[in-house]
Image (cartoon, rainbow, N blue to C red; front, side, top):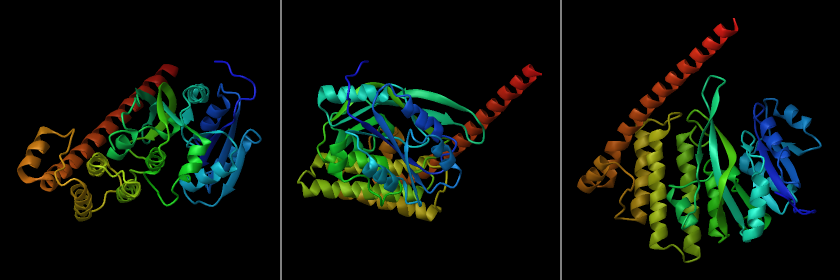
Length: 356
């Protein structure tokens, strides 16, 4: 892929908080881009694990600013204020880009005149408590008929590092919501879709997203996850109402988003609230669903759930199925983790014996 001289600058924005183990790989993936004109801006968000020593090693290849811990969205907004690029790439400090990511997506935006492009991506999964990881299958993001409805429904998501934005789009939406501590990337992309930006899909895997066990920033605290996703969905509902676009279709998408959030509570294994608080949380989500769509029918559910919903209604069906599903998932997760741990330890033992 060839480029003309004086190609527009791409600003790669990296918020860093206690990512000493990973940030070197993230920055190296930026420096190794085939695109010739990138600037790398890192805002360290009050790290205490030695991340700064790693970051300072890359000066002057990066622009580094440090400050107290204010949250990832604050760091992203500050880095954007320091940036000069016509195109904006957001990259978390523990993830990394494929070498031709920027080049392919800049060319795509130039050719299509789109405002935003997103591609495919894959997880690098790290097993807990052992130094072992593997690349998962490629997640094909695909073309979405209505990307706003897809985002609101919670049934579709694209990893944030797989996206490239034109600068004016970030300015138009006012940056990232610094009040959120979860649902941040979904909220930001939803705000871009609400602003009627031209968002297009380009096939091909361009980004690697690290995941440690089943835990993410959002899922490490279930109450925070639910609260912040609800805030984001309510923001979208209010925005649609202001511009007279809160159609039945988008009400259904919002209701589906709340249901996906409720269903997701079954698959959180860390920092669960008490059972009484869990039931209260489910009731709050179900009330929001029925306020938007009194005749809501859950999709992609089991036959047992569908039968129960027809017989006793959405609320009772959810309270019967979801707690049981949560227990089953917890047991399966523990068994899988134990099996993988034993497998890794056996492989290591064999390797040690061969070396001896």
